[in-house]
Length: 133
Length: 133
Length: 133
Image 1: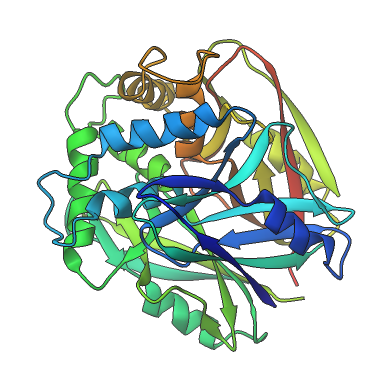
Image 2: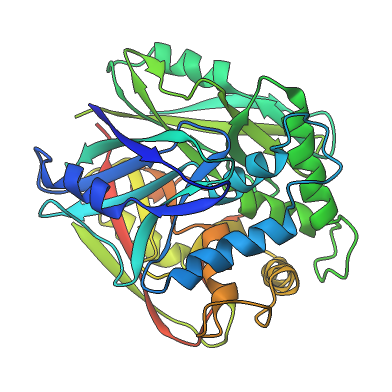
């Protein structure tokens, strides 16, 4: 079964902590342990893991990506969002997080971030649980 | 069981849409749903997901990587392909795509791209299906 | 079951080949084949696959990342390691490697590298085996 999490983004680029929503799905898992696959079905948004304690980490990541891969450059693609396609591939489109006792196994400072690069938009995140065999 | 897809590349860097070939493997899956693991067993080629509708997206991704990480730089590795090793790690060596009813669950604009960074070469892509439990 | 590999790093940025340690876990797997999930539970270290034959490949990857994303920049995060958070997201926090006959299925030149970006530190790598169904 594939579950969907709706993600509403509010600016052109934004990292949104979706950990609690993935944790909610894991809490209702039929199996106690396994692997949670989080997949972004878009081409101008990605997903990553990083620190959530200090919000400056998110803004530093977005600002470095913005400076190194600016929105306006000599791109061939005419929609004005080539930078977003590139940033999404750099972050990647899925993360795999183990769970045990129906709880995500994340490091102390880790959170799962949906990465918007061409918002604001209504996005979705797909989650599938692979039970522990 | 691990299945192999042969990929012949034709230029130094190239993104090749392998979605139809992965879909073909999924169509013959013994289980209706699960996870398709696509793995690149090379060190100068990677794999990513992105848009296939406009071919300019592919060429923008390759051209940004080429400009930011040029083939000629002050590299220590003497084979002249350090840039390719770096680009492969940036894109990553595997993608995980869910499938249902023996069909890949991809977003409307998504395709799976084998990313050659040191071609032309004869490459392979490994695919393993993890059935839905 | 989740297994832990202790990784002691010795410099600020370092790529450490952990293939033999993951292989050791796979050798003792109850199932003959499956998928080994390697997950880094940190936010300033990542994991990737690349070439191990020539150590210059590792140093070229680290040096390109160091030049493109310098430690000192106009970062907001005050701990002086924003570059490490960004590099970790670029490399990613997990790799998935298939195994057969209790042996990792890697390309001839491939090795799994723990990537330290804010060391030296005592780190860990989590490994979970998903058996082949």
